[in-house]
Length: 261
Ligand SMILES: C[S@@+](CC[C@H](N)C(=O)[O-])C[C@H]1O[C@@H](n2cnc3c(N)ncnc32)[C@H](O)[C@@H]1O
Image 1: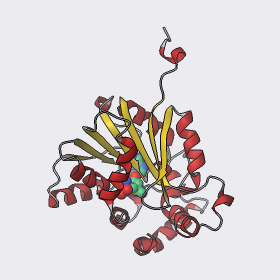
Image 2: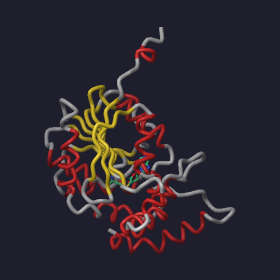
Image 3: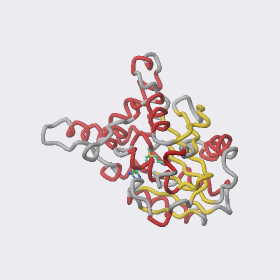
């Protein structure tokens, strides 16, 4: 994976160094990175059709319908286009806050005659008001650890997901206790290096930011998901040992929460 990112590492290293200056920025968003970051991100998953099949194995067991699908932080749309090939009759949306990524997604989809994916420029923390209860399946593929406001993002996922719907969250698979990653060259050599220049600055890019990046880790992420109203129904490695996928549904409302009157 790392060679894909070589062309952009020099520029990003300079940007990170600026963040350490007293008067420097606290981080930077994907939109402030080189446009080439969108391209390399879009090309890094070798088999997007295979990735969708792997996400589908646990997800399909947990929802009756897969007619409406939302990819959050969809970048230039590699996974969304694979979803379109797999579900040509579904209503699919790809959402990203990066103008460059959305333009690229639309451009590639036209070339590939992909007609059932709508790519929209939106922030995952404030999705369209009329999307409440709209989606059967929401996917965050390599996104959650990048977010500076993961709490409000997952509240939005709760809102736009149908009650019987399912969420797939795929993220790098590293331990939250950093010492447990010693000896794992994937994590130390690839994951942490890329996170330092891409994921971590993005997750630090607003006031009161989470500051997660890859180092957030699988154990702490799972604790967050459970404490914020999700049932983790399945957890498995997908694609490579670097990626873990959580398949979640909404936790049932507790009686005292649903009978406030
Ligand atoms: C590592 S990339 C993954 C892209 C895509 N899911 C894929 O796997 O090819 C993370 C994406 O999340 C998007 N993103 C980060 N924060 C976001 C936010 N607050 N709202 C919408 N998109 C966001 C970035 O612009 C970027 O395209």
